[in-house]
Length: 190
Image (cartoon, rainbow, N blue to C red; front, side, top):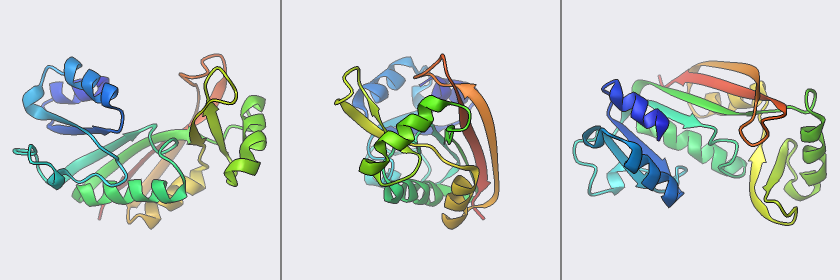
């Protein structure tokens, strides 16, 4: 919602997609530029604007696509690939994808190292763990932390070129007292 508001203030037309109905409702409520923004409750791994009757005035292909901390929680490897494919197909030739995701943090944060090791027998994927509620048995969703090489490979295999990835140590919104790596990537559809 906040990013949509800022981009629409700059004159951009945009589409927001989320599986969470509450998040979409909040984005719609906060956005003052309704004429330039469309929000859809949908699965980002399979989303196509053409599936909606109310996409009037919204191009079928976009100049840029933003995946903000989505790729880490969208699901397994297949879902991550599908998400990149959806982004690729939604872009115009020469369009850009910008994404942020969680980076592998075991060498700078022992808590993440423990999470990776604890959940590996269940996830069968290194650097994937379960985000849980207050009760440890309450699994909310799986979270994957990427290496720079992994996100670079995913984007290139998805058809993108001019891939640039930056790793930055920051504090997480879920764990503000702990440092973690975050990856910021940009790539172009040829």
